[in-house]
Image (cartoon, rainbow, N blue to C red):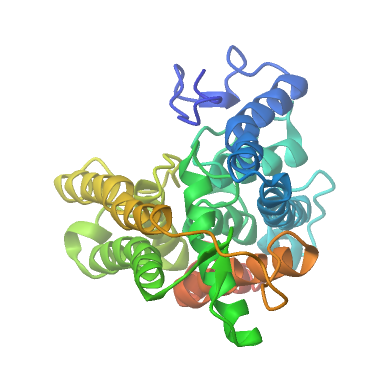
Length: 341
């Protein structure tokens, strides 16, 4: 129930790592499928509603590419083991097993961590705080991209459609035509609302993280100093604003500041972002369908899928890359030199 609904709250504190809740590698794989089932299926529903099934498959393909890339990076990082031990010449043939259930191993844990943060779920079968720096970068970046890689039930779909509007706008600039999607012209009003939507999330996460990183009532809750502590703060506000629920456990969030700040991030991240999306929906619903012409950019082929993936990655990179550099990326570099946090 919790996984199909992408909620993530478990009966046991160990969540989906507990043997009563997730006893075998097969059950872990089935739970991963449950996390993605409804949100991925909504792309098919969108194609039916748009009366062009190829539109839905294009969105699914873009989401799947980003998801598989995340799984590959997370698995590669975890299978290579702790970079600090690797720098000392210590062999880890089974990869980084810290914080993982041995019955799942590195592969299942990397897959589950990617799925639960790509789909706005928050359930875990391994401790994200024990992931390697680059392995932990993947769940963090999944949420920061707006959880458009399948995302929450419904929320992931409208999130990726905002990126679609931005992608067709860029394509329209390339061909010198007014951008169109599903036969309707994309104009200034829709683009302004789309940019407002894209700015709300980083304003919440980066703004509140910056406040917590410079104030005593913020850093006093950090158990790990240095870049890992910054990652814990950033993950907390990213997860709250993204309605995910997973966390890096080294942060004591049970303080007045974090209780209030994380609650504000949850409220704004869920409800404030809905406003511009509803505005876009209302503006698009009132427009007439324009017949496709020779200058219409097709939104169902590999070229558009590649453009959409590029726009999602570039927007996320430009927005969050500086913060990620100071957190997990610096931690990885220093860990390879023997520094631990």
